[in-house]
Image (cartoon, rainbow, N blue to C red; front, side):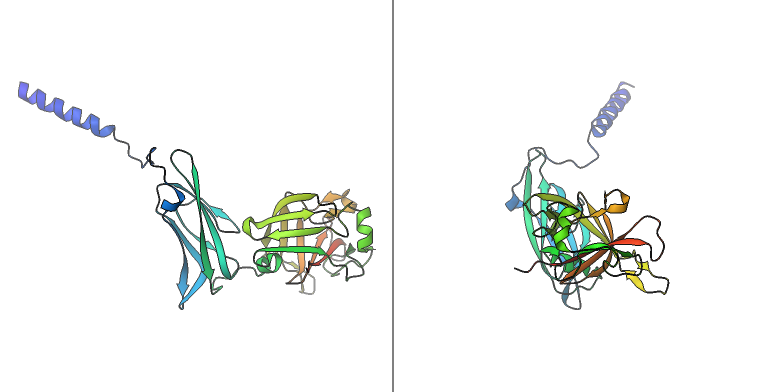
Length: 279
């Protein structure tokens, strides 16, 4: 009987020790590594022998993950992301060690084939990196109003670039906008050098169609943090506008519009005319 009790006691002690072992993986608090020791990869998916714009990210290091792939971020250890421009792209990995220290590494990915579709507007707006835009002073009017789903430029009240200052001080001649691919960042630089920062995004599935079936707005541009130059709606108490219909966007010009609330076709909409800054 004594031998049986002793056997049971040993079993209980063994199970107690086992139950104290942690079941989840934990980072070794003394195992901080350097950036040179990182084992991270960004490998394009290859189709027909070419690097496509879909990239597989993998972190095999004992650090927490944060990937910045230009137009977005992910904190997953392994993920698949979509690049929006061809050519060489930088993917920035930031790892957090168990002791809280951070390390970074920049991985270069060469995209040869835009096999997976993305809106070409990313490339038009940013030039694949950073691109500057200004008022299109080749037009008789750079801002004003006209008919929603009908006009393609200011048609009723037409405002030349010389008069923009009266609407939004320091946002006329000499002011510009900068769109950056990395982080989808947007900057509005006033004529005195004052800068306002924000971000931007596209929804090219949100189209505005006229009654005759013509696509008038081919997508939406949305800003956060600040607005475009003179981004106001006068009949709404000069309310700042953050979402715009994209009427035209290519490598050289951009035409944006904003309809007043609840207007029907030919109701009042506002128009902005921009062009790329040429050095």
